[in-house]
Length: 397
Image (cartoon, one colour):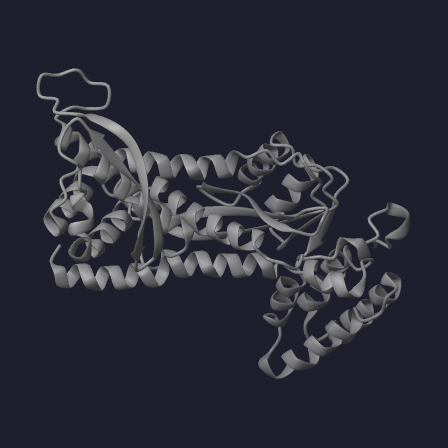
């Protein structure tokens, strides 16, 4: 990779991939480079007995390093019984930083071989690292994602689950296939939102969603009262089997989008206004009566619209008994739609993933970033004190 190509590639990567995870990748790579430098300086591995040894390790000294992705807190290895160890890493930093970032992106997001990452580092920066070091960094990062995806979720209840999926192109056995990425977010009983899990699958099916929800139950998810999603039948079936008794909320945005797609352009505004007006009443029964009137008015001209309203409108009202200021947060999957757009925007830089593992890795990295940003929010996503979570207090259709 030439310097010109390196610069262009890095600029594109930096525009798509940033945040704490990318900074942590760079820190781990820098730390591993210094460990290998010290090994060569001492002539021996840690605890290795050899005639070539010239000294011993002597702990670490903290030092900060400013980079284009933020400040790194590094632990500089120290030596005793020999000449002081001075990291070449810092001396080479100015001309090698871009190469390190490219190597990290290649390794972690593009799913290429550790040998290729090693070559990029050595040609672009002069750092000598082993393929095992690159593998070690990748393993540490994968372990961080695995820990996040496998964390226990039984310390609180999860009244709301939100589910959605998108498709990403992945190369498999010489062919390019659309890989489904299934994502579940939750809202805790204290009103905080979190990313619960994600999974890549061959398709968005009942079986794949059932596996996702079964895994969440095994990790301790409990107290689920509402599940919010689009109208995918696989999600509905999986929700019924894994969280019996939870109400399913059909996403109002998807419902409207599908209804308006069935009418001519000149009728879209009129139908949209009538459907919105039908759900403005606090009493769900009145809303259903108004929805039936809308269906009847459009039935002659657009029978498919009338059928959709009669079949699905009530399913969009499951959260209607919540306080008005809160229901707007949970009667659509807009939260998930934003996540899906972010995943697609950031995976666009890759184009076609070389394998399923690299796809899963990048999606997980983006979701971890989003999860951590949610954890830093001062305000709760929902003010749960205002929610009447007792069955007797909620008017569900």
